[in-house]
Image 1 (cartoon, rainbow, N blue to C red):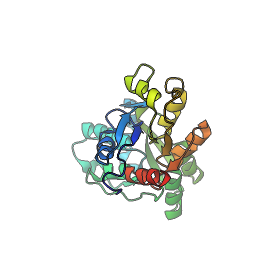
Image 2 (cartoon, rainbow, N blue to C red):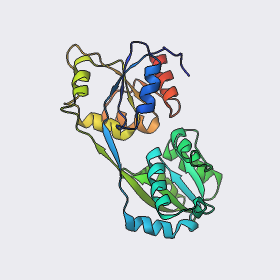
Image 3 (spheres, rainbow, N blue to C red):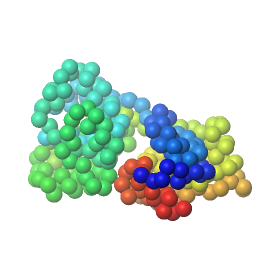
Image 4 (cartoon, rainbow, N blue to C red):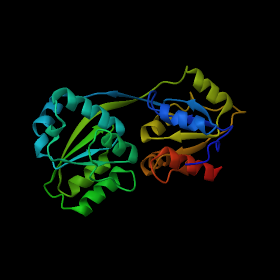
Length: 260
């Protein structure tokens, strides 16, 4: 954990969805930062009930359930608890999670995470699963959002895994054109901006006109939560000034302090 006031006087921009950044905001503020919240994306539950019913009928046949995000854990278990009144209805399925935050969300439900790759990416999770055991004909359920983890699914398909996908939420871009916080950002800029997902980076790129800095504004150092977000930022031509060693706020702050 960085020193308590290591970010004193620094303006830090968070781009996570409204309602998802409170913990990050509070922890950054505790280290002296002025936190600017620009929620570039909005996440809402979006479940096809027919697909959900099919998955729940097959639940006992899956060998693995893979969660790629905290939102996936949240919305899947909201639906699970609506239908079932006993966690044992999950059966003997094993659970894999991408990233520490996702794994922590699973553990909060008193469930064990059987596999979590050291690098927080779907690609790494697929590699570790395939290396660990034969996935030929194994049946796997991947809990996703509207923007699917295609690489994860593709790699599992290459290993001849039977993959079912269950989208439980959708990610949409927010419109910040008339947002007073965006106006403040354009006028003053910031010391750093944190991107915690490829979707946020895409939204920032798409809203370039609404977020264009004024002549006297400070250009922020752009930080990425991990390799997947970094790849999207580079593809879009956005600068990547620092990248977290692991997908956590502490690691992101440490990378920023090193850059500063």
